[in-house]
Length: 186
Image 1: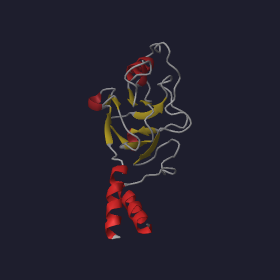
Image 2: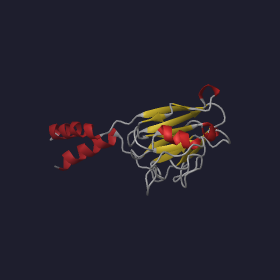
Image 3: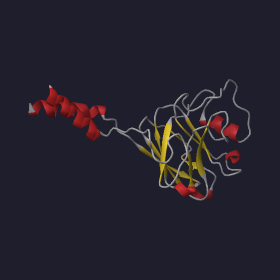
Image 4: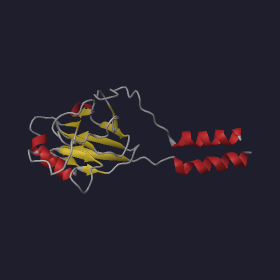
């Protein structure tokens, strides 16, 4: 029986997805930039925004890059560091809401397509007053449910507020415990 529990616990390890924390500096070097400007993240990954100066990390949509998305997140330099958790692999569009920063190209994306019409470059072009590429739609980050949930050292706004209610996280340790419990029941 002990061997079965150990074996099932080891089998559960591949199902415990590795989660990555991506660091983004907002306003690096006194410039109106996010560094990096675009990242690829998996569901369960976190993105940690660290602010250098007075800036925000405000969720928007592709077609309205300089306007806050309804029920989107908003982190500010007073909530630094500000962390979001990626819930799926749909694109997440972000801008700095300080007046003049977005229109100067201070935008960021997660999982932006590298080809087609809704790329990071097209998002930045629209933010700076350019025309959207032909055929681009008014996509939101994920349709019916948010692509990211947020938390910070102080306050945040968004679908879950600062309490983090509604977030569910399963750690590798929990997967092992479930695997061991299944082995004991068998």
